[in-house]
Amino acid sequence: MKLWLSREDMPLDAPTEAHAARTWEPLLDEILASKLRIAWYGDRPLFASDTPGPGAALTDRASANLWSIAADGTDLRSHTSLTSEEGYLREPATDGSAIVFSSRGRLFAMDSLEAAPREIEVLASGVGAARLPRPASASENLLAMRPLHDARASVVEWRGSAHALTHRGGPARPLAGACGSRAREVRPLGRSPFALFVSDAEARSDRELGGVGSDVLALARLDGGGEEIRLAVGEVGRILHAIPSPDGSRIAIVSHDNVVRLVTLRGLGDPAKETHGKGAHTAPGADAGWEADADRSVAAPRLDHVREIGRSSGGEVSDLAWSPDGRWLVWAEPNSWRSRA
Image (cartoon, rainbow, N blue to C red; front, side, top):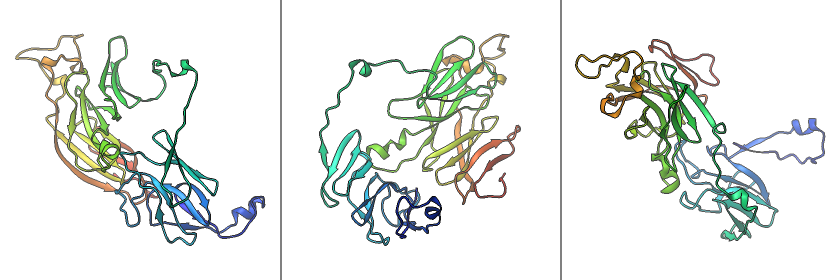
C-alpha cells in the first residue's frame, strides 16, 4: 500500500467531481513496504510499516513499527522499536494529541511522538460459555481438497494443516500441522505415496528470533507414517505457489520476489509398477501404493537440483499449469501481453 498526498485545500463536502480532479503526489515511493493506518499528527503524516528503513531491498524484512514523515516527503522518523520477539505494531490511531496501538493483544499509548510506549492494562470480561473449548467446524477454513490419481482419496488443506481423507469410509490421516507452523499448497506428488506441501516451520525465525527465514518444500507419506521430509531448496523466501508435474518428478515454485524455479527430484517411484518382494504381485482389490504399510513402503524421493527458469518484472506470477506429458509449464504474468512457457 502506497502513501499519496494532495496539497490542494478543499472542504470535505466538496462535490465528488472536485475531489476526483485533485492532483496527488506519492510520498516515500522508495520505501517498498506497505504504509498502513495513515493519520495526521500535527503537520506530520503518521503510519505503520514493517520497512527496515530507507535503502532496504525487496527481500529485507522487519517488525512493524510506528513511523512519521514531514509533509514535504523528508525527515522520515521511527517512533517505536518493536522487534519480532515483542510483536508487530497494529492498528495505530490518534486524536492529534495521544497515540494508541496494539501489539500481541495488548494496548499501548504514547503521549507524543517522542514519548516511550506505555501499556494500558485492560481487564476483559465476558460470558463464561463463550470461552469454553469447542470443536472446530470441518467445513470452515477448508482451503483446498485435491484428489489423488486413483480418486480414492484426497489431500486436504484445513486450518494450516494437511490431511489425507479417503472418499468412502476409512481413516482421516494427519500429514502435517505442528503447533506454531502452517502447511500450504498441499498436493499429491504424482502417483507416488507422498504428498507435497509448503511449510513455514523454518521461517518461524521471523517471529521468534527476528531473522528473515524462508519457506521450505516438504513431503509426507499419505499413510500418515514416517517423518516429514524437507527439501533444501535454498533461501527462496516466501513460496506462493508449488505445482508438481504429473509424474511428480519436478515441482514448479513461485516465490514472493516473482521468481519461478524448477525443483527436480530423483528416486521417485510409481507404486503401480512396484512389486513387493520377488515375484510378488498386487492382487485385485489390494491396497494402493499410498496405503502401503510401513514395512513395504517405497523409498522417499531426494532433491536433485533447483534452477531459476523465469522472473516477472510486472508482479506476482500465477496460474501455473503443466502439460499432461509434463514437458511444458505455462504461467501468467501481470502487465504482460503473453504467457510464458
